[in-house]
Image (cartoon, rainbow, N blue to C red; front, side, top):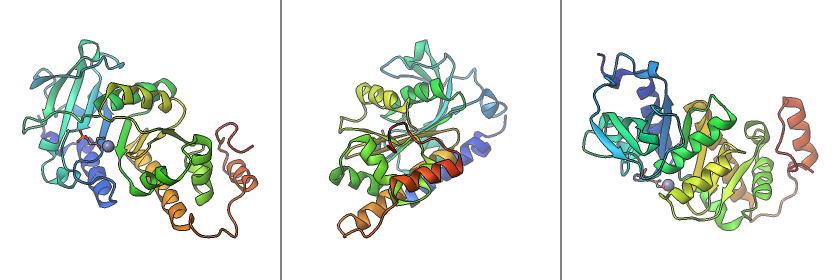
Length: 270
Ligand code: 13P
Ligand code: ZN
């Protein structure tokens, strides 16, 4: 068996956690990430017959029996992930109708998966129902988007249109827009269910006064989605209090979408 610490999937997640921290999106233990693995990702690295611990999930994760995830641990500081990935991260396998996660690797200090495991698992199921290639769910606390939820209308169409107007790239990168949840208590099955419902129509779901969830086929795609939305939010906050002389107009957004062959969310550019 090779050491999983040398596996490409692990290296990729360590790199993303480090980047997320560097971007200021993950103060302390803020944020969490889960990656759906293929058997091939752990083949030769992890003995799948050796279950280290059985971790109750507290809900029935709506995913196929045996689904494998690489996931961040609860309370783990993103700043420290790269120094001890085996303590901060874990590989779990869902069993018992998703009510149990078998720990196959990691959480060496006796830890467990993120407190947002319900939102992650339910969001994976929701995204997989619309895109069979979705593999990543990523949550963080980027300050621009978070700040925007205090001063901007939380209406999804209005919120999306403002972000689209802040940068030409936005409508190309997230043509389906961003969905928004009002403030809810985090770490619960309820916020998990609400997030998953929103994930059926967009890869980005803002949690008002908390942060954002992103989903995608790869860590790079998902990171890039949040990076783009966060950049737009930052521009909005820089100019929100200033008199605007011009902006991207609805017609401009339509032209960008047509030129780049993307379909903006129906009704958002009427
Ligand atoms: P965890 O440390 O349990 O992942 O929680 C961090 C967080 O961002 C909660 O929303
Ligand atoms: Zn959070």
